[in-house]
Image 1 (cartoon, rainbow, N blue to C red):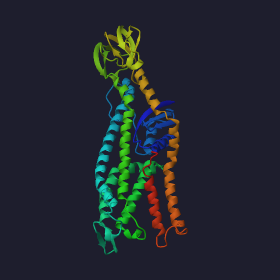
Image 2: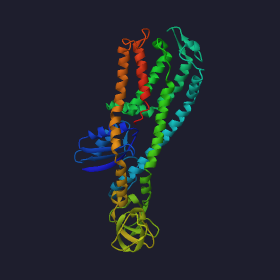
Image 3: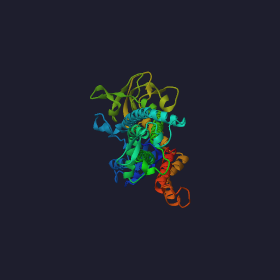
Image 4: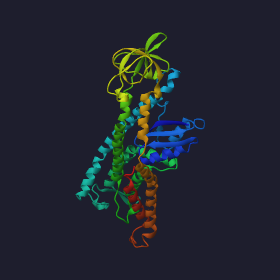
Length: 432
């Protein structure tokens, strides 16, 4: 069995975690899978004789707009075949960090643009609070109205202005949310993006109908909710921006450990000293380390003696003297004399790489309360959709019978109105 940890790009909610675990868990040969929402990493245990990483990546992509980062992701450096397998861990972190930074910048730009676009709606809301803007009656429409004689109704210009302002903000700002919801739908699943998409689109469609076909709801007092749909998208994006920032700070421990590594090594090959990138060091290489330099990888001293500062790895405050035959640890600092050593452990086998792996596994461990939250989140989205549907049926079938709505009110339009309100209220999805 093989156990690997892979970064996942695109995890935004607890439901995303549940969906990924469900889809990858279905792959034949996968015995265990755990996705950590906080670190955006997936730990998977699978049998290489039954399944492959390619099949796991396919399952991840089918779950939605997610990307699994492996050793083949992104640009790679040319290196000897023997060294290629040792580059995986570094590629994981470098490419994942690059993708997350790119995602953060795109998200930040969207938040800023949508936030600026919301300023007219804030002014509109302030005018409504001061009573300077009233409801749907055409006679009190602030900007007047356009009458469509052929269809015998009017279009409120104030509502039309809100439609023109909100539509590009909603569909551009919420593009990633809508794509994620659509991917989840194709996978016959639902996530928090599904709820947000349904709620905001329902509010937008309802408001669009009120704007362009006001006679549909002429029996009840209605308002448009263009500002609600855009505000929801804005706050969801703002929350994700703050969340991405917090996640980056949470990963500072691993980033700090990675910075301890040397960037290159002085290797003796064919009788000559050559500077090579750390990723190209292979087992058996003879490496020269001079005073003040970092030891590139783990190995055994073959010539010379020196004092080494191992505090960054072992915590030992005093330098340790090492001589021929003794083991040296990668990322520690040579203090006094030059020496040569034979590389014994490289790449993911070094002590520093093992420490990084332990930190990653510790970050991936969930508290018991998180498992409870995951179970609640798993039923939250379908639960809200069910409540909205039952609300619609209640007001459609029982509203008139129980005398809850007047005889002059159309039960169907009123039921849509109430169900839409239910979805809008649930949109903030605090559990996500």
